[in-house]
View 1 (spheres, rainbow, N blue to C red):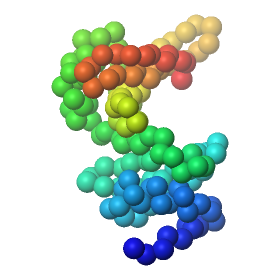
View 2: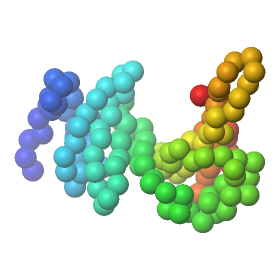
View 3: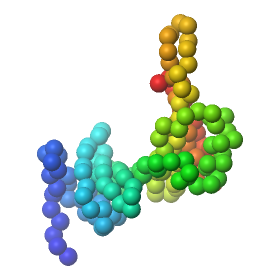
Length: 147
């Protein structure tokens, strides 16, 4: 086995060896990887099998989660797609879909918005929501906000 070294990415961010080691163990075939740091969390962006992934690690090198963007609703599990189509947000526009892999579960986060609505007091505003589904299609959580 070759010795692992500290990684300094193109932006000059120093990635500690414990984090790069944990990443290479979990994703040995990740290929080209870009790193960034957000709020003491190290994030590796990489590609694989026609998808883009982001793996999140804490400073101790513990893997927290991995996010994968899903391009189309038809790529969702059938149960989630069905729940989305018959739920209260069925008429809303799907902006983005992410699959989250965590230690004990997979979640799908669907970012939807209502389109532009006219409010006489506030001009234009748009309602948006993050919908959290489990793999069985059960809607677990809704975070609504004005966009």
